[in-house]
Image (cartoon, rainbow, N blue to C red; front, top):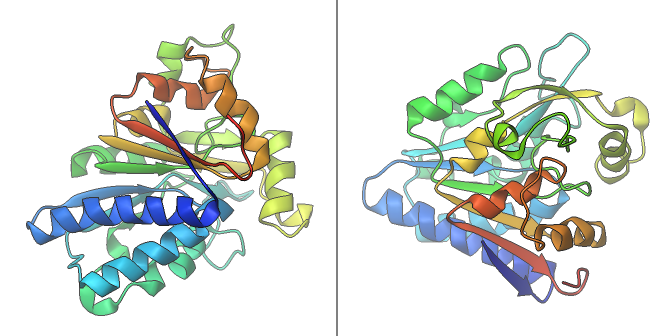
Length: 257
């Protein structure tokens, strides 16, 4: 695992966009497919803006690009919320990345996959059938969770078993509900779903390369805990310590490590 500090959000966003562009363009210009794992949230807003700008300027052909999102909220009916919902992650990706890509580059939302509340295992099957993820972009929750893989006690599950968790339906913790209500739902708690479908730890850890971004002061504590070097289900992001190619990038103006 590599830790890298950058001055601010702008530098973090450009670094992440440049790294993803380099990987995508290298594959596309050589006629290879590329499977990109995507995250959502405020952290990624400028990342996707800059990534689209670079792909468009380069005229990168995107017919062989497939994307796999980490998670989606689930409604009371057990299904993933529709993209008409203000908090839909499909809607987020369309507004912040997909619609910014020049249509002539050939990217199609038919190759943009999201986990489905009624069939979480289908997400893992699609990733496996595609050949696994080449690159996984991650944020980190204030409790140290990645995607919606929330902390679990070591008395409930070992680190090794936690690392094998599949994509699944989960009930959001009160901390996550409160945080996301504040950050993405405009403080409207009634708008926040109470369940989500999340990509499992196994599919995340099987990605060939992982880039985790952090820019909120509340992320300092879990990042400091990761530096202790002990993988534990009580800090899900700590399992990245065992991954062969993970980089954590944080902003020095808001986080001190």
